[in-house]
Length: 368
Length: 150
Image (tube, rainbow over the protein chains, first blue to last red):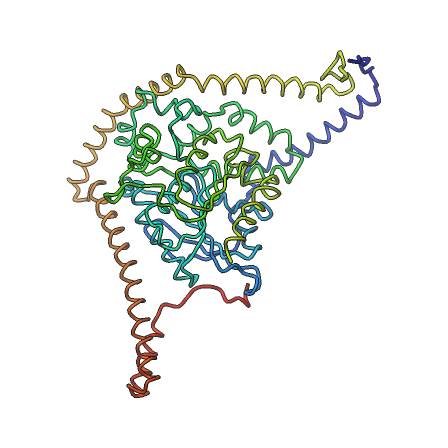
């Protein structure tokens, strides 16, 4: 071990550093003024698309192909996001969009938007989303694309919904199933704060749903942020403050902030089922989850499965996805552990360099 | 491995030094809080907090709902529950329409296919086959943008 001498005071260097800081503050003030007066507006979900089907508040988008017909993959891809937050995270910003990336690789990309549930939708549960609405969206996609076989990519609760669909409708043409940070196995009650919070007897989910109908997006957002309170309520804003002179970082921060703060209400019946039947009773993995009068049996999943997990996911710990692999009846299945968090897995430079190419390569082999 | 006795401190960069100290403190705070929220005590506390809030708001919510229901009934307006019920029925109707549209399209395609086969076999007159073609043409227009426009 060597010991270095402490740096000595260099007035020229000190002046230079202070001047640079003043300059940075000057640039930052301009950005700060624009932020404070709402003049910095960053839009998300900009890849050109059309609505090809609607039902209630749901919309099915088709993204316009950007490759010549001969370079397009014959098997279309359907993206399904969670019931909380908007699906725009699949298509955050030009250059930072999974949708844009896949469209440029020649995929016919479709995206299901669940919409913003109103009070009249409070009675919809996972059976409705997985087996009433999703199959109809799939049917609309099949009719539009003219192909029966398709790939599906579900993220977070969207992955749970697609797994239920895959298990209950194994013969509907689903060829490939990509799961992103899929919460499936809640057997480990020590895994992550959510398990502890939702399993406490004080957490009265019935009363919450009875009073609110749909659980407000603000409560869901509060719960998600509470998992890492300092990061979400302090460090996040500090990151913006430190980078106010960097337009690229500010733009990317605003895009993500727009998405995070645009929460949607969780349909009451689905929320209750999520807490009771999934989190507390772990019915999906125990093989006791009943839908349409039948048991949801993961052994019925026949599609090829790519299960992507994130090593630093604090919302869906990896153990909630990994163990499900043994339950799937698919012959072709792969578990892919990537660096990143629950959202960072699919957004940002790391995602575009690592996660997207790996998903695309896996799908490309199975989309001919 | 080298180590400076003034790790993180540079007299020529006071702002940088302050940032380093700030980040180290915040990092420690973040780790502490992340550990705290992952405890049974915190889980019980947050659950209890929510339960108390719900217990406190329940009578107020119930009173407001009852008052509104009475008031809306007095002025001959539908209540919230009635509007919700109507909206739910609309969704069911929309779902049935969606199914019927698909079935109708399939039926038209089948009729079109039969007409083409019959025409090829010479079993129907060209006029009848044309009528079959016209029915086939009634199929909803696909909205996909032509490849040349992409």
